[in-house]
Image (tube, rainbow, N blue to C red; front, side, top):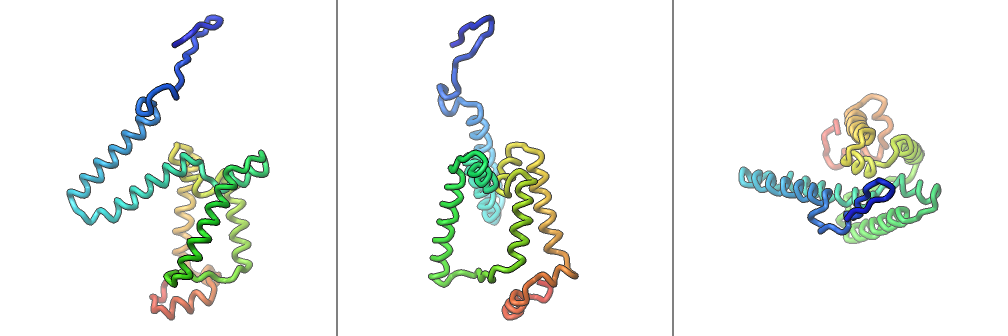
Length: 198
């Protein structure tokens, strides 16, 4: 349906009036899902040991879809709450923190936790400040940068590459950086007979 308004033709057919599979974005999503399914099937027929990596692939696809659909980003949650007064994303972050707290407490009570947190110290405050400033300069947190890079945002792609390379460089460096590692971590690693370089 179209009507003419002052010489301009306007298309009144809304995207929501089409069937869900006829929408352009949904067709792309179905095509990508079909390619991943076919590729996974082919890989599994070659060798079943690829199943381990395919689990990561499918988790990544599901995680990316959920991040992009929900536009979940901690930086935008705080920004929207204080700058615009929209609490929707901040409530989502609070729910995520509450669910994590409950599941972490359950794992701890069951005695299957392998995570032993250290007391909060100056290193946590400095790391939090660096993380916060980095989110502001990058335009989003790591999850926000992930889904934005999937949408084709070049700046977010650079952020993800920078995160990846800086983590690798930081982890593999020695020297004065080793002095930043708490002595309790070193003692714990030695007690578990881990190699000295770890």
